[in-house]
Length: 139
Image 1: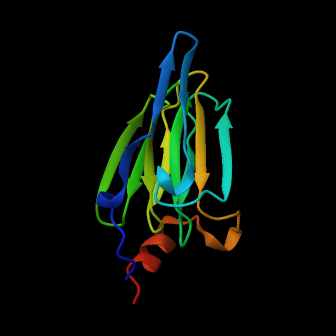
Image 2 (image 1 turned 90 degrees about the vertical axis):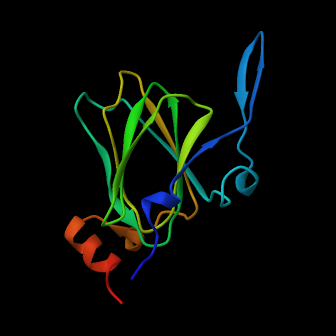
């Protein structure tokens, strides 16, 4: 059984420095989040009504920020479900491995910034929910 739960997903505030010229937020790897990012990507120009994600990772951890606009993140550990709204670039959600997640309800102009603990590896993805449940509760 893979024991991670949605209760291990946490909202993290990253440092924000403000002055008359605007705001600056900094993420310095494991100082701010629980892993050193090995991959960073962003999703944008999402058509109205579309969702992204809808998978789980066996090893990869993620930290997701609404760099611009807003969207919601659905979290599912196979037993419990929770939805988080992200709408400020100085707050993000940490998602450990073993959590089924997807992003939806994107505002116009939203930018979803994702930091991942691992480089892309298609073998780390579980893209079928019934396979996720089987994997999650196997010995």
